[in-house]
Amino acid sequence: MFSNELINKFQPLETPFYYYDLSLLKSTLEACKTASAKYNFHVHYALKANFDARVLETIRSFNIGADCVSGGEVKRAIETGFSNKAVVFAGVGKSDAEINYALDQDIFCFNVESIQELEVINGLAAAKGKTAKVALRINPNVNAYTHKYITTGLEENKFGINQWEFDKVVAALKKLPNIQCLGLHFHIGSQITDLNVFKSLCIKVNEIVTWFREHHVEINVINVGGGLGVDYYHPDTKSIIDFETYFKIFDSFLERSAIQEVHFELGRALVANCGSLISRVLYVKNGQVTNFAILDAGMTELMRPALYQAYHKIENISKANSEKTKNYDVVGPICESTDCFAKAVELPETHRGDLIAIRTAGAYGEVMASNYNLRDKVKAVYGE
Ligand SMILES: *Cc1c(COP(=O)(O)O)cnc(C)c1O
Image 1: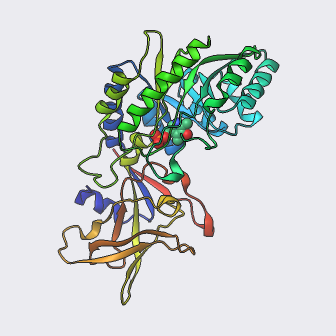
Image 2: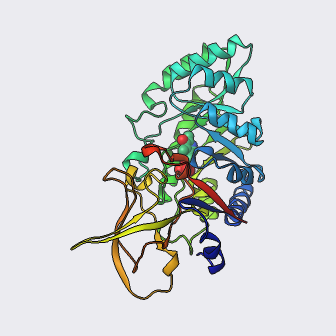
Image 3: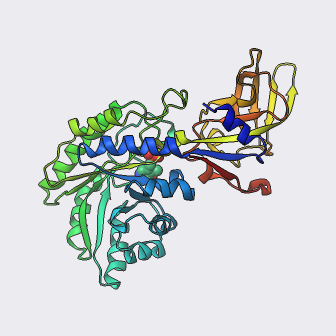
């Protein structure tokens, strides 16, 4: 909810911009920390969700680890002050340069996605006289019941090592002296709202951990990835996710010994709700069937609706108390038909100059911005 004071503060600013509510971010981080600390769980923040400098600095100040999917992210995490001992590095296509950089930084763990990658990391580590610590990213074949573009844990997916390759992996590990296998890694998809999915994941993980231990691979680290979804429909009443219930599922269903560490990689759940994309209405086109509200923000600032039909709540914050409403297709200025935030949105009667807030845009929003159509880089504004 935007106060009148905040809307007045927005009024003279050039749009579009991302607004980050840092105080909501802090409350979210606090809730996550408290809930995970109960079980001694280790949390890493997935930088790819949002790497805005002030957002990152706020997250770092909570002593959370970093989950990176490129050398650039490893570098950004280290430069921001995340401890190298709490950096994990995943990704199906790590280049030699990225692996070398991460080896130089002595990161906590590479999440390795194939046998070939294990061999490459072993060779590069050997050349430096180092031992690389790794976790094997396993494809557990658990359906995340999320959008097909953001599910990653089913067979025939480019991510991870499949069950039919386990024997080969065990054999490979024996022949790679510069690899130290810490354990296993899983990440089955994003925006998972059915918590039963995590229960199924735990049960599958238990089986897989047992299999590896029976084959004489010690599993000291179990990294269950991220994917916890947020409520895009209720940004004000459900602004902080129920971390308690989430972590309790893992405590209840994941078998672990006293020496086994459990790690999580949360992105969206930590940052989605603290961000909104603020934009102005440039033009209103009243058609015979469809009315269009044409904004000064488009898919170049927030790509999720165009990329995977994602829903974001849209509000006309200039007319919050207006009674009369109309339906609008809310679109951007980019020369693509997919540049549409939502169709037939009920809004107060809308006019040129009105401020529009596109909510729950803190994750996978600003980070996916592009300068297609030679658009300016989108700015950020912060609330304390
Ligand atoms: C993207 C990603 C995450 C974070 O996913 P969220 O859905 O934002 O929680 C965690 N781990 C890996 C390996 C990822 O690629």
